[in-house]
View 1 (cartoon, rainbow, N blue to C red):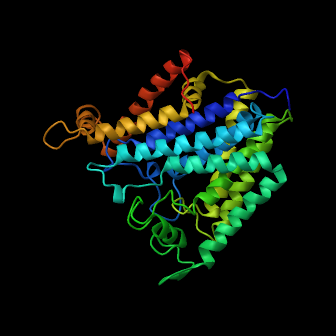
View 2 (cartoon, rainbow, N blue to C red; view 1 turned 120 degrees about the horizontal axis):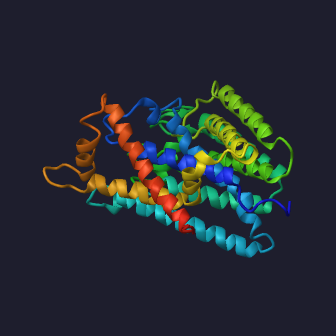
Length: 365
């Protein structure tokens, strides 16, 4: 494996597509007018928006074999790097929570979980697991995590509610979050990036690790085999969903394997287009997004929060003013105008990251 590439352009493109999608669904012109596929499922079930976060974790996992290979032979250095990076990611997530919180900020109710916080924990776990375990042990660990989490959700009773109640307030994952984090959650009842749900999220990322290891090999027909594996995982998730609902908020085991399967299929298609067919003309902005994922996500979501909080008089935010002055007057229905604003915002940040890539500016930790 010594002649394997240090980077895989198709993986950058896959990660960039995911970041662009994350910005798209996070920054509509108005939350009062959003097409259903561009919003999360209310509880059970899924929409395309629910796939964005697991796709990002899958991409992170797929990058681990490439990233850690450059530090092979220095285990202590690897561990220090991993823990340092995870700590910085977690702190950046808290900063983003602070930016997104309407003033005044109250520490007693300040949200602790978040997207970057979960990424930080999953990254640290996956990096340390892959350093210490063989791929067979990693696969066993991922399967055990999914089965154990399933058992906890359906067998562990919640005081005053009972076992196997998968409502927002009655499930055991939300109970644990309330017990350990108190009022530091997104809502008084639960948080979609809570503690127990991080366990199956690690399994999602480990599926990405397996995909990354496979793509680093020089085996023939890598794209096809990854695609078939993704189809099998998706079907397994759908079948599991008959026993345990597919639910992104709880990151149920069925959702973890279902979304990992779809991510594997998407990555396989990117690999086939870019590495096999050499069809790359369309991919430049997504590759730029994929080379600067943290900067693109953090600054785009942070700026959107600032624009939303920045009042220009009469109680109207600067974002609302821009939206009403540009897309809202000439696009109908309102959902189309709201989507057009989000697309324009993605294009704006695509210009930024493409220019950063042209200047060789890559912000990492």
